[in-house]
Length: 231
Image 1 (cartoon, rainbow, N blue to C red):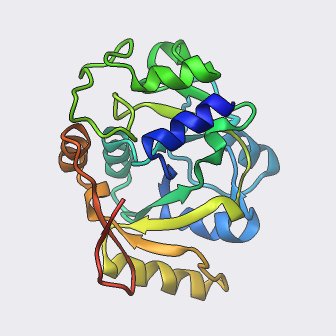
Image 2: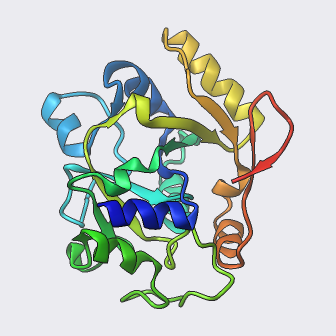
């Protein structure tokens, strides 16, 4: 696990990402005090709106995350399924789960071949950053961001729960959405103690994927602080 930590630090990995419909925030910040897996939420009878109700990866007791940026393609696909509720958030999580016991890795979408490419340990982690991971459509170029896996759909599977204390920030698409999330939380008697990050490029599949492969950092800024900063 120490090798994973050293590699993560060397690559400049500062966070993991987990996206969900913003209506799930009330449960994450309130009832659950963290992020639970689909299986745990179902077993406990807690209301939830699953992003992936099928879980063809066979790991419904894990929480799906990505490294540094959300999966551009699946995030866009998931958002397109619900024509009524349009607001989604990306929860930014401390990277320490990468070297935690039980975490698993997949160099491409974890559902591929029913989870056949999912592995555990340093070699599985390192496979995310090889020049041409098995099954990937795009080999890694010299310009590719060091902190980002070769395949933008690569996944990190974390045994639940992910604690509230591990949540660094909540990323949204716009200032208008940030205001809506704060208002929704207040109406439900919940405070959003985490920073809110405005990151419109997270919500642009083509641009996000292109910027990662070209080695460009995504522009983000803290809500309430218009001074832009890069991640």
